[in-house]
Length: 380
View 1: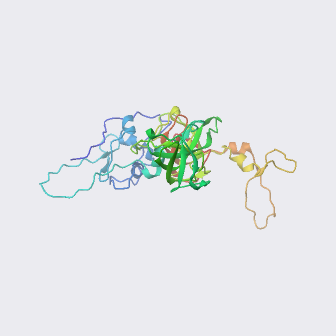
View 2 (view 1 turned 90 degrees about the horizontal axis):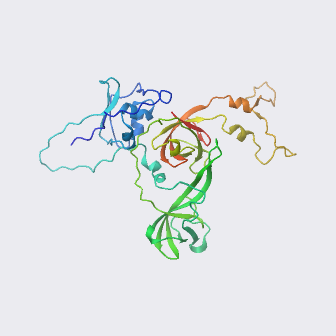
């Protein structure tokens, strides 16, 4: 009745030395660790490795196992094996114990340890979050609400056009959001489909009656409905570094926020056509040249000055005034050339959990400062 042991005989295809350094155990890494409820692959890897995304290399997984790894369950024991030529991790083989017939109470089958907390990304796995410019135009839509309200939410009744019985009674509500533009190429990668909530059809007809069962934002006339998918979320992927060079930008943060933090969802300017796949871990860099000088120095309200001069405002660095100094000192001007000479600053990690052709969604795993739109993502 021993649990299956993750195979150690397949080797991961070696990565280029320029892309990844050899995995290094933490100085305080335990010799053995018992998996408990609430653990994730990321948190377990963080107990042993300085870089959690190098888990497949020290675990000796091949590419197929990374996509569909064998499961680790609460109660399993992970040990550091130093008997081989190189240090590796393995599951401790459990002994089989013969039991005499007796009445006993057993818990339900344990759930496998996920890569990251499923509750964080589950809402984003089965929803069409990136669409084309006209992809939602032919979808059914909310025509009116009961009592002719302008906005409605959970618990309200509405009337929709275009619903069919063949697609079922469960629907999701979306609204096309802002375009996702690659700041490096000015290419429009798609449009974010803003998730609004869930609806259940109570009566089909030329105008069907729907009951709003869940809402995350206000729902308006014209918002689109898409049949709920049957996709089963997969949390079993393994965090790992891309095999090929990747460099992109964060083009949006979920909720149209300018800044984000750990466990937030962001959209990247690279997708499956660029080699990104589920489980890829990317480093986040604060780019000093990524439009921040223009944002800081541009006038707040229209053109600058009484004459409407379009010339950029001179930006002066902030400095503290000593008590015996002049009342209004002027610092040295900060120029485009000065900012271009500043090095990019690495401050976090993001992991891809859903890919599209030209864009992808990632979750912020670590960040020592706020994550901003236009920041750079690249190989860790």
